[in-house]
Image 1: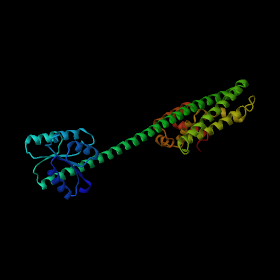
Image 2 (image 1 turned 180 degrees about the horizontal axis):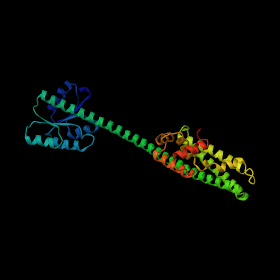
Image 3 (image 1 turned 90 degrees about the vertical axis):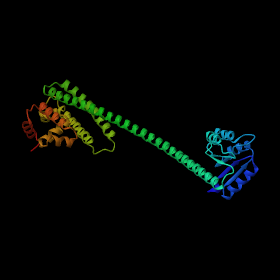
Image 4 (image 1 turned 60 degrees about the horizontal axis):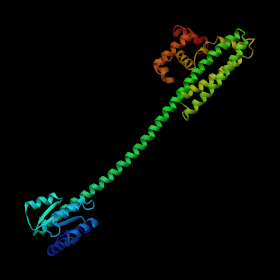
Length: 340
C-alpha cells in the first residue's frame, strides 16, 4: 500500500531532508524532497501528494505561510499537512493547527512516532477519499433514481389523464345514447298513435325521424364499443350489444308499423299494446331479474350497479307500467311471457 502513496517533504535543511527521505523510503513510501518552499507549493498543486511534511522555520517563507497557500487552492486544500519544528512551543503548535495542519512533530523526532503519525493521517486521508467517492456514487444514483421516478410519474400522470378523458368521453356518449334512445321510444309511441288515428302525414314524418335517430344511436354505440378496445367481456359491452339488439328490434317494429299506414297490421296492434316498449333496456333487464326472484343485492351484483339503484329502477318500472307492487309486477311478467 505504501508504494502507491507519495509524501512531499518541504524542508530547507539538507541534513534533515536526507534523514526523512531514508526513513520513508525504507517503509516503501514514494518520497518527493523539496528544499525551496515556493517550489514545494508548485509541486503540491501539480502532483497532489497523499501527505506533506512541512518545516516551520524557513528563511524565504515559513511553514505557516506555505500551509495557508496550500489550503487556499482547490488542488491542495485537502492534502494533510504535518508540521516539523526544532522548537516545542505551545504557540507554534497552536498556530500550526489554526492554519490547517493536522499534526505537529518536534525535532529531533523519534522515527517510530513520526511513522505512526504519518500512517494514521494517511489512513484517515484514504478513508476520507473513499467516503467522498461513495458519496459521489450515491449522489449519482440518487439523481438517476430521482430522474427515473420523475419520468415514471410523468408517464403515470399522462396515463391517468388519458384514462380520465377516455372515461369522460364514454360517459358523455352513454348519456347521449340514453337520451337518443328515450327520444326514439317517445317517437315510436307517437308513431303508433298516429297510425291508429290514420294520420298518414305525421306518421310518415315520424318514421323518417325515427330512422334517422336510430342511425345516430347505432353510430354512437359503435364508437363506444371501439373505445372499450379489447375489453369485450365487460358488463358495459354486454349492455351495448343489448342496445344494438333493441335498436334492430325497434327498426323492425317501425317497419311493421309503417308498412301500411291506412291498414293497421296485427303486428302493429301488438306493438301498440306492448307496454314493455315504455321501458329502457336497463329497466327491462332489472324487470327480468326481479320476476326471476332475484334480490336487490343479487341484481346489483349481476349488472354491476349500486343496490340503491336497483330500488330506483324497480320504482320507475312500476310507475311506467302503472303497477302498484311486486306481485302485480310478477303477474304482468307472466301475462307478457317474461316468465312461464
